[in-house]
Image 1 (cartoon, rainbow, N blue to C red):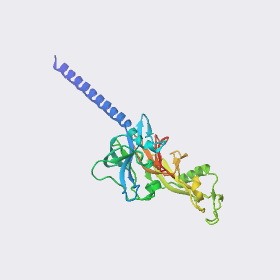
Image 2 (cartoon, one colour):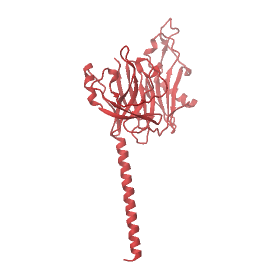
Image 3 (spheres, helix red, strand yellow):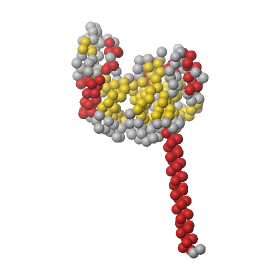
Image 4 (cartoon, rainbow, N blue to C red):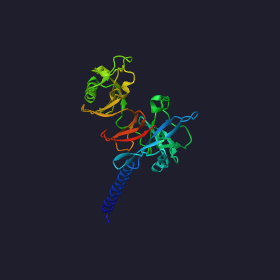
Length: 316
């Protein structure tokens, strides 16, 4: 065998070896991505108020959604009787080590265990923390985070069964342009062409009310790096004594504003908890907390806000 032929054989072998190595790396990467898309469970680290006199608040993780195929599905919450609280736990993960996320950052991890039964409807999905060490918190306590309990608790934090915490769409608080606010207000008017109000709380008689644009309050707004926006609107200026509790327009209404400027209604009576790519598919999911009378839980919007899933429970 000549030196030239031996050299060509060596070069060919090296090239084949390199191609095999690259192919294997790609296959492993694809397998890792596929695994991260499936087998993902989403929870929320909550600060739970004590239910009985003298019972302290406690931190726990509530399992809320799991990835099934291309969609997110809620864990079961429906009960026919109080006794169902004893059977629901078997439908939840028995134990999980959770990565705690907020604003695209990894805040640490906790391990939690599902109890043999849930004590109350409001504790469906709760796992008790068994790991040692500090449990992450963000900011101070506020009654805004406790739903029907109306007591100060810490901000809920997203918990993920895999370390997927990044927010590739980079959702942030923002102040929207006048044009976008005007477009959202028009959609609000389309949804609520009529409203009522009272002249004074003492009179307390609801009459037809031609509300102004200034009466449509911008509560919160967020935007992504792709120029998609979310805005919460509600009517202000209630002059009735309790009547407006039954008027939806006085409650928070969320609208999705696409980069093209198209505005569509998203949901109501909720507030944004966090955003992140929890299934590692390259797109951010957005998690809202449900804040309705006697109803709590979470709504998850995904696939460019085109799909959603809801985990809901009732306090009573």
